[in-house]
Amino acid sequence: MFKNLANYLFLTTLISGTLISISSNSWLGAWIGLEINLLSFIPLMIDTNNLLSTEASLKYFLTQALASAIFLFSSILFILQLNLFSMFMINSNFITLVILSSLLLKSGAAPFHFWFPGVMEGLNWWNNLILMTWQKIAPLMLCSYCLNFNFIFNIIILSIIIGSLGGLNQTSLRKLMAFSSINHLGWMLAAMIYSENLWLSYFIIYTYLSFTLIFIFNLFKFFHLNQLFSFFNQSPMVKFSLFISLLSLGGLPPFLGFLPKWMVIQSMSSINSIFMLIIMVTFTLITLFFYMRLTYSAFMLSYLETNWNYGNLTISKNLNWTLMFNFFSSMSLTLISLIYLFM
Image 1 (cartoon, rainbow, N blue to C red):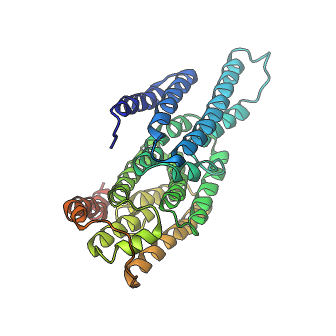
Image 2 (cartoon, rainbow, N blue to C red):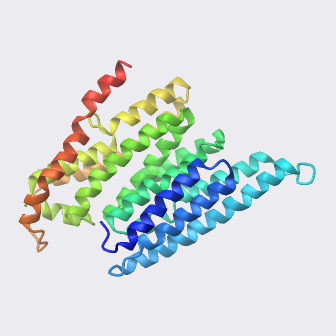
Image 3 (spheres, one colour):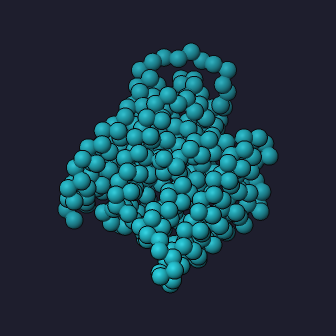
């Protein structure tokens, strides 16, 4: 995964920063953990062979530094408001909204998502996986401590709408995964409203499905859609395996990705959030549409061979691993859904 052994040190401190944030009992301790996490991820992002990674790391640093400054400032205001209420007549709801906004900016939720697709475009696949999964744990966990329901409802709707519509005209797989991540983030925030266990379950399944996809993308060095189409004439089995994972991530039944959405739909129905649920399901169908469009084109149309050279030796050596990951991604819903039904 890493050519430089020093990166394993940064990966350790990256994990430590997240653990410090989620285990801290004060906002200042959480801020320290977020800063350790940020400063550990920047060296992991920089790749001397990719000039775009330097630009992406600078964008990420500036955005996260801004969010951290807002978070620290609002946390200090919150402490002053509690201890010196007569001197600082500040509405606590306003401070909570500022704290939430800074955390949502860190996680890349809409409308604070402006930095996320650009940063994703400049990174390699393994760094993208860290950015899409691990880097969201600490901000989302801190968000669950200070939820403002009216504000979060608006964020959920915006994230799902922008995540769905933003991916429609994308030809870059990294930007496609970025907008898909924004869409899934809206579902995670909706799950967070109901219970902490629900959003954690959604996050774990989303992480697993993202790993299976990024494993294939990194294995065969896929970055754009035209690479997929020209490659699949040579390896139909990998094509079948990849698109099972894509449809599972989109939430098509009976694949595994439908299970967390099913749980969120059931939970939101139990608290009578029908209007928001209709918006969520409708715009998630748009996300599923561009996955289905991609799948249909790859399966039903025949493409001319191009000069892309992937090497049949690499395919034969790694095909078993790829198919194993995708088999579990697609088929494990049958057992899990039966267990969930009879609980």
